[in-house]
Image 1 (cartoon, rainbow, N blue to C red):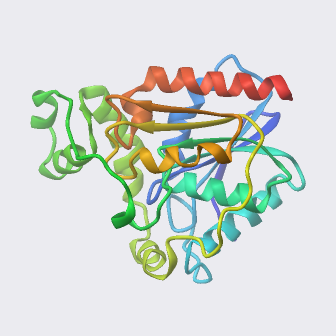
Image 2 (cartoon, rainbow, N blue to C red; image 1 turned 90 degrees about the horizontal axis):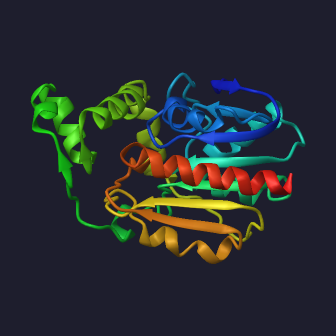
Length: 263
């Protein structure tokens, strides 16, 4: 199965799974700064099927199939090896599915603004709000760019726009819309229940103003992860890794430190 991936570095595998309609760049741009000066990690960034440079597959009709495809690729890349997982948004949902399926091999987990409840109407969400805006930035954008940035950004400055453009907006243009819409219609949520806990260092990182997946539903996962740190960051929306970059990096560094202690 043609799943595009990018591998950086050597050592213990850490698998990065991006959000819905994005590609590996969203995770790569967020995570790579945390490996500067930190050796011993093999970072595996994937493009989910139908997104980025990965082909849409007719055999994939729902999220169960999506998970199976990702696991098949991982078994090819790192057969029988232990690994850790980072998942962003829908990728966080995938990451929890990977823990369920490969529980004996997972040694750590990071959930970044994770989708917890597939059904949007059943999520607990804060109201959309903008806390910081640079009018000059928005005035220099096209009407479409300004519309999508304004709809997502809690902090709307030049730096945030550039990251949003490169990590979120541009990758989304490569998505196979027919393919992802089919998954949304046929089975966006898994058909199985989550039954495993994870006794390894975990980080659950959310935005206080995330009106896409929220933070309250993620908090309800805390007892499933006895080694979890949970953070909800003010002035952070669904792209909290962009809007609160310094705090995000600090928390990721702490998580990696905790994992390295047990290796």
